Image 1 (cartoon, rainbow, N blue to C red):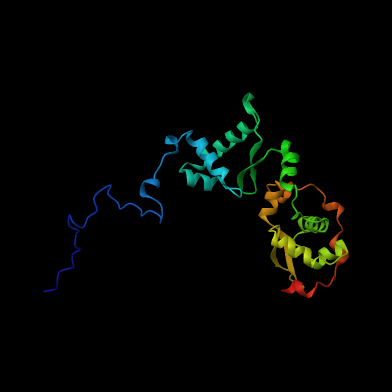
Image 2 (tube, rainbow, N blue to C red):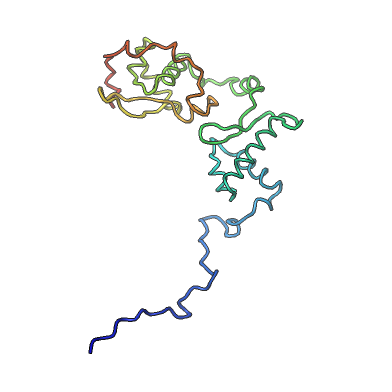
Length: 232
């Protein structure tokens, strides 16, 4: 007589998880368990004030999806709240315009000084400051911004001077970065960064003023021999 087919062992009462009694996620290190669950509606000022509190400590633009995760709200709701805050700061509805505004920069949102007060704020920030970009750095940055991806040799050809030191300065400031190598020569290619867009108050490179037609065409510099440093 053949052996009976093996029978699956049914879990007993002690083995079966109780309905609705799934184990709670472990709290992150240094965060109290009761801090993990909250309702922004219970906080002073509700969702709008909570969103403001997060934006005030942001040192770079924050995507709406990230804000939605932090506030435990749908992304569409956060997008609506951001639009409400931006309108409120501009004085919509007869309110007093603020000295700052909320706007999109790159892929995220951040609070900035209102453009009307830029001159005064600039005087405060730059008064006595020695770390400003030189004219050479600004010119080099403009060439990179409008002609990227571009090698140091090509930038040097446009400016008529060696730009190795200036490019290093711009790189250390986080305004430009290495983004690849030129296939034909192996020279390092440079482009602007997200920090550059943020400092310029731009959402993308498409928003830059149309100055590119006034810069020399790189076809005129075909065959320019890049410095050996570009290959490292």
